[in-house]
Length: 197
Image 1 (cartoon, rainbow, N blue to C red):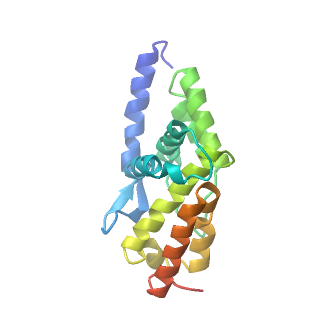
Image 2 (cartoon, rainbow, N blue to C red):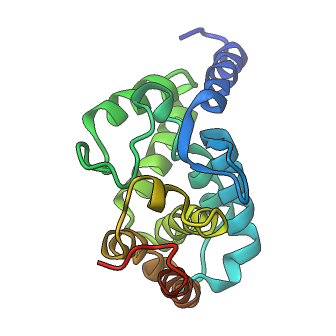
């Protein structure tokens, strides 16, 4: 790393531009275009700002926004693992840890440590901020799939029980939003958009 913090920060800024090229399986609302990771992170950050009053407990909103903006940066190296992947579990992997070390390690030490800690806190999901951030991360694709007549649920023949089990984490961060999400899932089943198993 350069002795000049500004130069290392600029290199980091250039590096994270690669997030715009990481394609997700979900598509934009009412669209057939796949979302990229940068769009996803931006959307989640704004969702958190708008929906913060629904968090189960008071949260440091700035910290939540930071979490949402950095949580997928590791996918620059590790790629996006589809939440319903049957071959690879959608949990923190060794590849993601190595990616976090490399990407955040481009920054001056104090910033690298801060962003690494924020990323690890999100992954652990134990704090009020992490629970609320994770609720946003699970809500957005649910809304997208619902707007796209099932989207990835239909494309990959994902049954209700699997969707429900992945989405119920929303309740840990925002119970009132979970009530809405659970109703939406049931509506999608009733409309034949989400397959009941």
